[in-house]
Image (tube, rainbow, N blue to C red; front, side, top):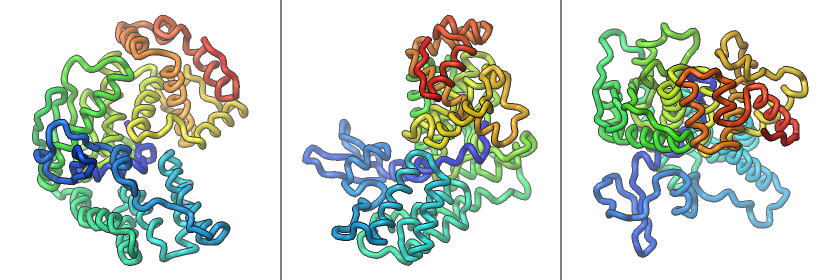
Length: 417
């Protein structure tokens, strides 16, 4: 289950739109081609299907022109702002959302006519569902962007045109039942809100299928297992999701798993849906292999870990590592045994700490085991083995040993089982 706070994931929320809408490929002579018709891509062509690959093909990168320091301007206000902008983009890539947003707003305070911060803030606000703020930044960007921003302008205009589609899906329907349409897929039983299909058209179904394939392939490779039967997936527009499931939770959510994956989607989905599907698919696989959700720290830790991997983010941000080290030093550390039944009863700060600890523990397990061992761990849990017995048999360490090793590593030690 993902709260809005934990589901806001920046860079991937916005950037993979390019790959979702267009087919990018390179011919034998090294020329880059772009088309919206996948049937026009020659068989065997070298294709770019994600942000990193497109960035390699386009020298300007998917984020626009390189942020180079102006010649001869070292130490000037302009040079300083360029460095701040570059640092903000790096923070976005590492998932340091608050730091990046603060830096972008600081640049605009000094230089309101600078276009780049408006573009990045539009991506940030759009990923949060703040459509009015996103529209404001996009319109300001278009009004101030001059020469050298042609690619940026095209992207901004496309995003602006899609805001109305998303607004309609966020309006709470006054009446009428949810209409779900089945989509064919060999490994998933997919049902989608008819409003999503009517607005997003065939691109929606194709994009969703690709994201699910990515999740199944990536998580299966790292866990060493895939579900024995097709996984159920239901996709909703925001309003339909709220109407159908708001009564289930005391806080706002964008997805959950109850035997099927239920997630909110935009009509024109991008990285935020891919990320959400990676997270919820991990929960689905964990439940299918173990028969339950415990140990909860492992379930949530793996989901967080693979969610971040879907964005090419590190397992932990610098801020999270600092928070974990402080928790060890100050005695506020939450033991894994406490987090095994659930994260219930934690306040907001403790919940954030719990997710960071769970992610760190899952990352530790991955760095000290092979996929076959992780698959065996889930198998033993599914056979009813106690947590400690399953961990010892598969990894050679129990819960307390893992907790101690993790704390010592975060404190600078290198305890190994």
